[in-house]
Image (cartoon, rainbow, N blue to C red; front, top):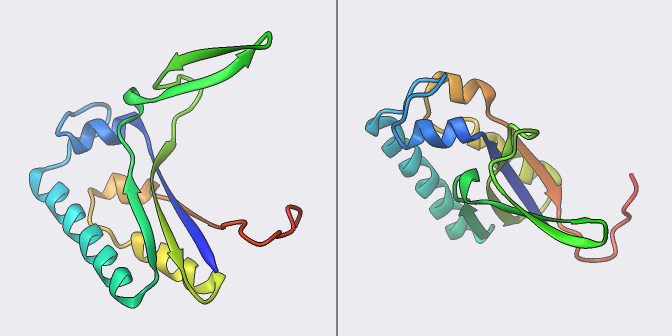
Length: 138
């Protein structure tokens, strides 16, 4: 079964990774390199095991557009959005034997090197992909 593992960040997180201090400290080059190496190694391991379908990091929220209807007409708003702190930062699609295995993979992301304030706030969601008429209700 396929699962999507979703990771989240804020614009401040993206700024910190780019070396810009905000209310939070900037990442060092070493922090950023360690994160990249960790993510690359995890992706390689999952690819070799046959469990990785796809993984992508998403661009900073300032490069986001939201489209929604207002009075029946589509309205486009550029990001980031004041009403939303956390945004989707990236995703992993894995094809593995169980929800528990997908959860184990997501838990490994918690070990990703990063400044402590980033690690303390990090979350990942694991959701099955609806490929075979799964029940939409619990």
